[in-house]
Length: 419
Ligand code: AMP
Ligand code: MG
Image (cartoon, rainbow, N blue to C red; front, side, top):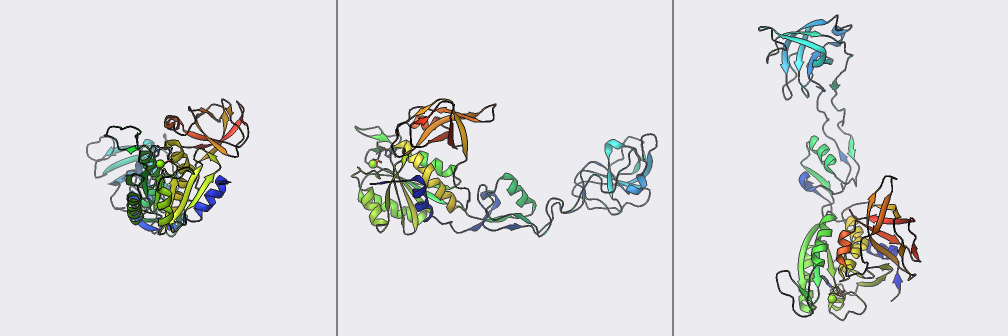
């Protein structure tokens, strides 16, 4: 079977993975989701003019020329705390003690910071007015109209588009939506992604290994990768290479999931039943590919009753790399993201990467860090064979080494950042 380039394989997959139907979800469930429509504000933020500091609300014209040796004396008529109504109005010769976030009372047009005043309680003569705000204040500094105020709509005006469609919601975005009083937000919801392991040799944790048997690690890694892609993992279990068990698991999976990942049974040499069953359930639409990458060359893709199915190879590193290269971009597209791939940077190879020309891109497990020269420096994280999962676990990037002889030490190499 001829090799197909990674880009071509990705195009084939993306063409069959349209975004899933948007819906309004509670803010608490929307982290990492992409908005499906532009979000408009129905309220102003802040909702009213308020003070940015603790101090005294004044009529700025009355404190013109105020200075330490020439204070302006005003009568303090009340205290307004955050959450209180903007009352009473400030008349000539008056001031209102006001605390950060409190609404500006009528008549006042500026706030003098507490640090620029000396205040007296009307009765006891204590410094600072009492809780009712009675007393006097000496203003030691003039303020311009509007000083120390946060105006209504400063951050967001009613009717304004706050976020464009396709905005990926982070903590700050959710905070803005909360400040606008939204309970739900229209997004592309998390895709429910089923993960199914296949293979007669697989034994669940907790059971002893018999001859020729191994543990199922792919289901754990793939479920975690799904969660890391902000999708919702659905554990479809592990099935032997048995047509009935495979058929049952896949048929159940497509009723519950937006996409399915299988591992194992997609290599050319495999004589297990994964191929037979996937071909039959997909109505012979499965595309069996040999992608020009190493690891993760064998890959299958098709749909069962409209649900995309990604047939990933069984080798532990191959299933992870196949997910990164082909499944993750598709899941992100299904979830309305525009930016489908991992962040790519041009890194410095601190050690050479040797390879032979074989027509494939090599995705090399590397560990790297940002250094003082402002560049990301990488080194191999260990052995590169596709069963060596530990070196994948230790890697924080995949170096994309193009076909050829490799990369010299100190040379540049593109990497996909995995975290
Ligand atoms: P296959 O793609 O089914 O030919 O499997 C390739 C290799 O991956 C074999 O060594 C399998 O035993 C191994 N393998 C398959 N599935 C899993 C799994 N879920 N966890 C760990 N190794 C697996
Ligand atoms: Mg197998």
